Image 1 (cartoon, rainbow, N blue to C red):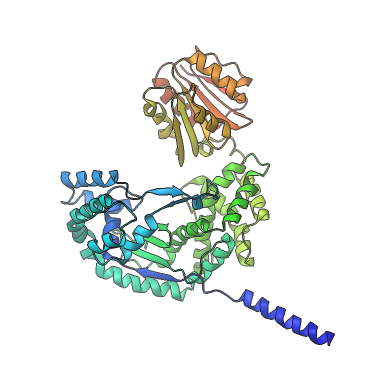
Image 2: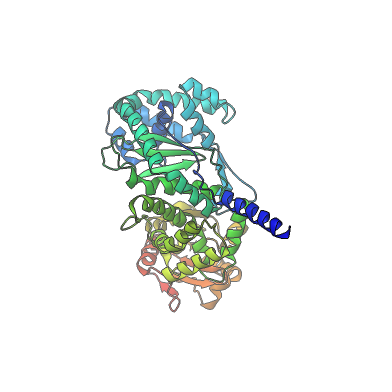
Length: 484
């Protein structure tokens, strides 16, 4: 009897394993073409949204680019048509902490049969005043849309829709994408479909796509309608779709990942955490590409050198987790940080990395003119600004927090301001700073790096920005540079 019970237990356990190891088909997917959705995207593109610039250029060279059209675009930009909010309980630096009405509005546009239908579907998402204004904008640009985008490309888009649907099915890419879902530790049921909405790029090109974006389950795919080079576009499409997996990563895992990164002893822990989002999405896109071609793309994968090199370095580690069907864990995070440290040994002092999250803190009346020279020299993905310096508790808290690089631009009350900053920021106490001099002081302290620019002439600010760009990194042995 004991042997029989053991055998039954074994069979039951084996059956459980078999159920767990069953290969998922992955999330469902549809490829769609919608005239109303394309019109909405067309207007957003013309207004300078995060869409393909070639389309905007074609419009600007057309007879439709009139003063009246520019006034309508100004009006559109001024509308609060995409209000957002923050989700409680999610780490502030993760995509899951941010949300907006965009997914619901874009899905409604994809389903709408007409502009009045779009209005009916979006009642309650936005104030009626905004909905009526949007309707007026869309109606104004409909002739340009029909002439430049819809009439020349609609038939080919429908053919491309069928071909791309078949491609996704034949290559079983969504099944492979399901493996990435496991790696991210995301909640995305198989029966919740991704909706890939095709939008025509108006210039000519051999590429299927070089721009996509995901909002909720809507994949906004800018494409050349005549192209069937689907495999080459996979890295871009699935890179963006992987961001949705990051958004839908289990809340507890998101909180754990943040603790694992920020609790690490590496001085680069914040940088490694901040670049994780794009580096992992870049890996994911290249991994999907490699499932079709046998290997990732040659050359650069991302236009940002840090993210590109980080993604390349992480690829073997992340691929091994995907192959084992294993989700991101503390071991992965520790190895990812070590990989970052090896790849970027100077990251803690390199300006190209430090300026990614920057706080410009100044006492100048025309603050934007003061920090503009630095924005021209350094690309920042998150920028905070504050004025004045004295008595600004919130800016001081940010400067002391370590998440942002404080770039403090002193242009008046030099003695009082430097004395105040020295009292508040321990990193400034290592060197005597003379208020009658113009200088750059760059150093690191308990909270991280800090830069002080003390200028007596506005022209010195541009000189300081150029000097920092030329220098490239904090010179710990020579933190003080005098300005002429």
